[in-house]
Image 1 (cartoon, rainbow, N blue to C red):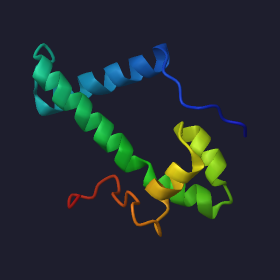
Image 2 (image 1 turned 90 degrees about the vertical axis):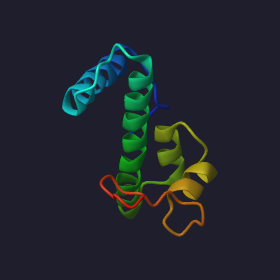
Image 3 (image 1 turned 60 degrees about the horizontal axis):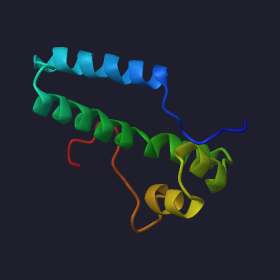
Image 4 (image 1 turned 90 degrees about the horizontal axis):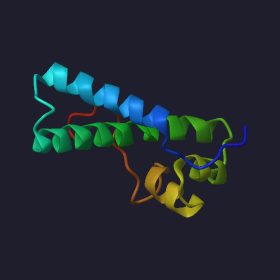
Length: 101
């Protein structure tokens, strides 16, 4: 599969908007407060970043190259390796539901 770098469009905006509204509802917070909106968006971003290591490790185990992963992430292969290879000293080792990180 040939992937292009990540992109934002109406679909990604709608998905984030839906996630933002759902998270606000779950936490019983009001989206009319800009500071709350910043907090919720930062929470979604952090959670999305926590979701990346697992599929990247699995993709690598299935033969996906660092070049392909870097393209999907919109970064360089070296940066992708340093951030997501479990053996790299700078790897993001957080997992989606790891409360200790």
